[in-house]
Image 1 (cartoon, rainbow over the protein chains, first blue to last red):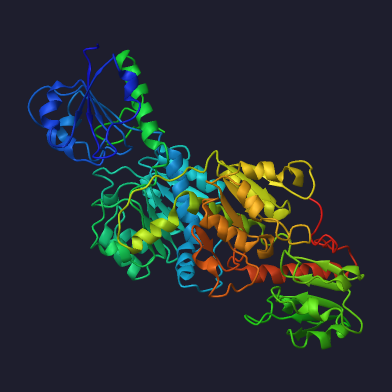
Image 2: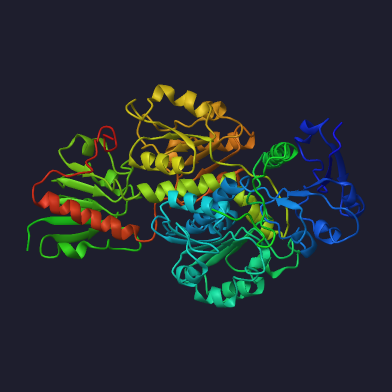
Length: 318
Length: 318
């Protein structure tokens, strides 16, 4: 038996991550939930944050005692995880970079096409047994502005280009194929589709606000598959009500699950989905396998991929 | 003033086809509706079937007197138009080949992605203010069987390939990139997506029936953007009820508009849309412009493109 202890912050359900069985004999696997995490943290070499929607790590980390040398989160974003004490520590943080890219790109394509082809209205009319022919929009030669130049943003751009959409990608800094933040407003103002795939950091929080919705075209649609707090939700609801933009789709929200009394459920032209854009059949299995692969590298003392820049809040590069 | 008379079978609304103004001084334009068509046919050199959903031509054509030398229909299908007397005459028939290819391909992509990502259920749950995370399907590496190897079928194949879908195209005869009809059952039986884009002819009428739905995978989805009568609608409804297949989308129906009391409106897993897959903003303008271009060729005595093989019921080749 190895003397390495892997602590797993379990999700409420379905509980244990798959694939960890392959670590049997090589590591001791302990499980924690939000209530027991603080007490167990000092005994772990590695922390696997399987319940990536939980705030438990951010709350427990600043406590007393030794801390894991490596934290892996089964998510692309690390915003729920990070606290100053973890950011300033020597602990390595890795994320699930790569697993969600293609599924999320497909999901964005689904939303773009559904809005262009007026599918929500079609389903509503079907419910009323009403035959009502409409003219819909072509997506070819429309313009998209994708915000967030990580692998998810890049995958979205590739997918939308495949549909014949003219795309611009905006990141934290200008480089090959990526526009810098100073070009965001100009590109967004002429886009038919504004897609948010940015990480949530101090710089990006609330970046889609009244001012930016006011700059978009009245025919534009806004899609957020990043993190809810990138958007000032009240400003989006107002922009939709005032017809500043033609529609929107949110897969992520400041408070999840979205409370039943939220006005967003019925905002005009808004599609609400429950934080599932990247979660295709087999995703949990892929996340488990990815952790095992990283574990092999870590145990062998080799450098890890997917290492998050803890100050920036994402994996830099590309 | 030219001595050529162009008779336009108008649609009930919006009435006159755009762009015909550019024929002013070069042709006399007369208008007919279903009631007056028979009386006016003998006076026309050219018939433009703008109301392509009408049976009026098929009913009026066999009457007495001279007949137009050229009939153009503002549709891809000629099934509503054709009668034996027209098929055996010297009259040239042309169609709107090309105008609908890309719009319909986008529409099919929208349906495929909406079904893969469970979008109808998402909208339903939104209406109930219910947050219910689900795992959805990836479309990359799934298999599609597209039936109908005209330009619409080819455009659908290109679009689905762009989504990473493995596609097979089935036509009336095997040739480069197209499978023959003897391979249809085999290809369909392993497809995740069966897309019908075939012309309606004596050979294809009712081709999607109980036997074929019974061969499809339980996880398969069926999409028809061709003509309603390609499908035995009762057999499809039964296949959906018995869960022989996972879902379907029909944009075309044996009787259009679909009667309010049709059981198809509420068939489980069926998306009903009102024959609009190709009708994107500007489509009528494109159809008008296409007729004018063909008219220039015809008036100059040059050979026309888009000439329908009247016995087969479509434009051969490709």
